[in-house]
Length: 450
Image 1 (cartoon, helix red, strand yellow):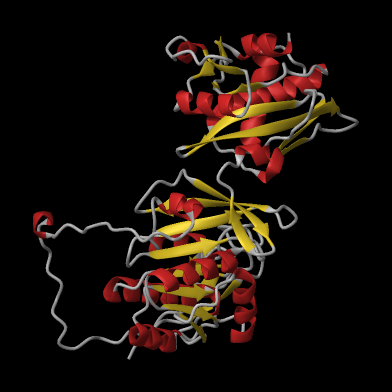
Image 2 (image 1 turned 30 degrees about the horizontal axis):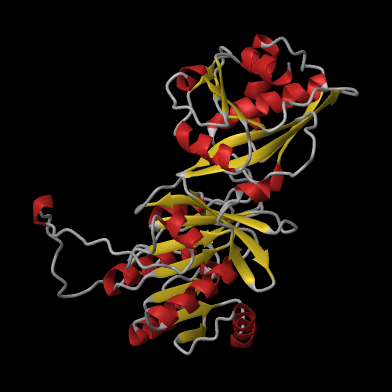
């Protein structure tokens, strides 16, 4: 009998190779390859062969979602949990993954039925202490501390829970795979088994995934392709606010975010995060501009702060927190070429207040105004905001859903907003809100900075 070929897999990114490599060609990690033992799969005698069927013969599925008890989590999931789905929750250690899932498990145990919470990292006593702190002591919330996935599957079939929580997937193992727990092979086999359990038995499953030192989910491409949804917790350990973002969602949008505040009693929803992310100051200061952003269907006002100072020696520094560095470099190039700002010899530091990460391209205009304001030492007009994407020619491009941005801006007390000129001519007037249409980034700087 021919021996199965042995392969090696990188423990950082999951890259597979037929021989051991000192450095991973995918992620660049050193000494990260371990032997990936072949998995022995048992054949199912007597199983009927799968037969292709016309799509018209497939019965439609009624998509009835389960409310989670959290409006923010429902928003990210697209309106609630889809039954028999497999959801991956990732984030840095201590960010609040276990807290979120234990709160969710307690709510469904009260409202729906038994919930099975499996932990391979903590003891039942530790989970009990957290449940007391969160007010999650529910009789139908069942705890199971086990790392053997076969025993977990057996318990799940016996209990038939409405929700199965695996904390975490890196601690689970299957006997058919000889690789150590946490390896790429084990993570793949365990996730495949949980996917089969979720779809075959109709058990909704949430799994917790650790992150690598680069900040990506362990085995990122591996897990993301197998599960139905990927939720990622963002935030800093010293910051009380957490942002839950859907990286992948087969049953909803990936543009929605949920905002939580970490408190002593657990995660608290933040229904109006714009008020938290805006610095309340009496007078405007140079280098600070409010951006009317949009995350999915939620308008979000945040303050972009910039600091421009002469470079001491060597190459000037470009530091960006909360915005993409390549986007910042593009905006700086447009400011220098189209607006005449000599920024090549200056250090530029940009930060988004509150620890928010802006992915909306309409944040370009506010970012450019903040940088120009810091460079000129002039504060923008009081109670003003901006939204608009900046093209390489210096023109201000249209942004999506401008009316929602205007309503949120006005409700928070702002009385002036800069938007693309072509949209300003078509939008209805809002009494008390001055809508300034700008065609180019130069026009915007003259309007705001004087």
